[in-house]
Amino acid sequence: MKRSILAAAALGMTVPAVAQAEGSLNLYIWSDYITDAAIERFAEEYDVDVTVDVYDSNETLEARLMAGATGYDIVVPTADFMARQIAAGVYQPLNYDLLPNASNMDADLMAEAASFDPENEHAVIYMWGTTGIGYNIDMIAERLGEDYEVDSWSLVFDPEIAAQVADCGISVLDAPTEMFPAALAYLGRDPQSRETEDLEAAAELLGSVREYVRYFHSSQYISDLANGETCVSVGWSGDVFQAADRAAEADRGVNVWYAIPKEGALVWFDMLAVPEDAPNVENAHAFINYLMEPDVIAEITNYVWYANANEASVPMVDEEITSDPAIFPTDEVMDRLFTAVTYGSRVDRVISRLWTGVRTGQ
Ligand code: N2P
Image (tube, rainbow, N blue to C red):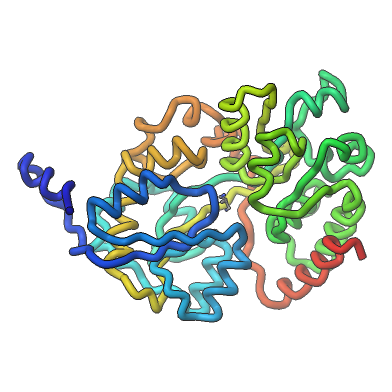
């Protein structure tokens, strides 16, 4: 119980101003996004019962939040969704007095996140990443030739190319806010466009490759890519690297990699936020502060393959991760990335109508 505090006190170190945390904590987080070890260590050190539920879409999280009384103490929205949830009064401001480890955060990244939440009043960054293409190196080479380089959205969005790889299985995210910007980037249009005409053109492109897509899903692709059940997935960076890692561990000749297409890709921030009606506010802060301990978050990054925004943790992150430009993008890669815009209700209605059409092939 509170071992870290006792240990720190015994060593004569300053005891951090953590909340007296006993009782419970209900976390609602993306699937494949945290380690059991990190949860267990917190539960033990702080003597808190932790419950973890998972989701794989912002829409799912948002529907729960808007319905209210979720019982969750911490949720992890992507920043563009969070912005409108803040406007809807879903979150409480963070009490930074309970978050001394916030000083470990990367100021530039937090400033980026502040464009969705001025002064980071409601949330800190958990992880960030990109939306690109995961692929099976050998299956693609067999179908498109050894010299084919996966560096373009055309692998998924050009019907002639997609048709050649469809037999080994293409999946895309079941997330219109991810797929529309990618389609717009491929078309050379503004990926942040809210214009109906642009969105219709994107929907037409998505519809033109619908027959080559095996499924729309936002978490199943990790194991399918890892097992060689599929060969192309529009997916999130860390998820694809987790697939690559699992495939390498299994050592059955499946080689998975990830590309950020040259036409550009989304860069996003997933945030730790506390719902307005969270039952265990102090424990929520204790957990957020715990996740900002450099060794804790480095260990999670080493497992989930997503970059965190904790500057002090970088020396503890595996070099194979920090040196990978697809995870910690170089300036050259950064130039190709764009952030999502927060859609209002008009654009939401357009997107959801068009997306239904894409999904059902109508
Ligand atoms: C974790 C996916 C999180 C990325 N599996 C979505 N922003």
